[in-house]
Image (cartoon, rainbow, N blue to C red; front, side, top):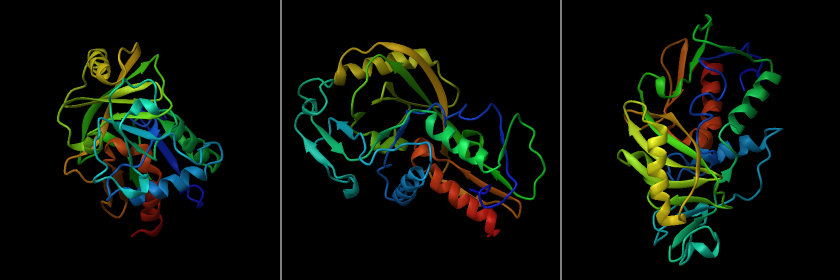
Length: 279
């Protein structure tokens, strides 16, 4: 966005585009089910639809909150619908499991969104460097995810499986994702099984994947794990997204938690506005 406005932009990425959480997420674009983030998400959807090479269907794939017994507390814009049998819409789900269907959730793949924005930035004239040396500039945007000052890593593991469903499947309770203590909760986005939450040191991805496999059994039975990987979600220490000017030369945008691809473009637009205006 800055490059399109005429700025000379250099992006420095330690390991390359989508090497971190922006390429190792569950790959689903969805409403964060948090009123404080809803406006960011709605703007983000509009920004994705403006990407030339990022096709986004008019209607979402949909999310099934498995085991949910009520639509209370869910935002009306996702049109929550209570189902007595999730299996009626998703045959992969075991019999006897109720659910709430949400009209949100586009399965786009873990890297696709980040790479689409990188291609657009390149076409606008932005330059990409790999490494840790940051050139001097009159303005710097720090967007280093879990490694940003004021943010701490909350490690998550996703596992590629042989199973793929038409809906995004999430265990009821995942909407409180940032408050979940260390452990695992069932999600299946495309063919990616998750989710887990571990503060501190990076966990053993394959060990956690086995726990996710076990948790999946109560909802969809046995799943075969093909591969597993861990990545640090950027969790702000006070629970709030960081989007601020630190001084006359530095703007920070970080702490998106699990909602990076779902709200990131809108916060990037706001960060670009901060840099452009000097406010």
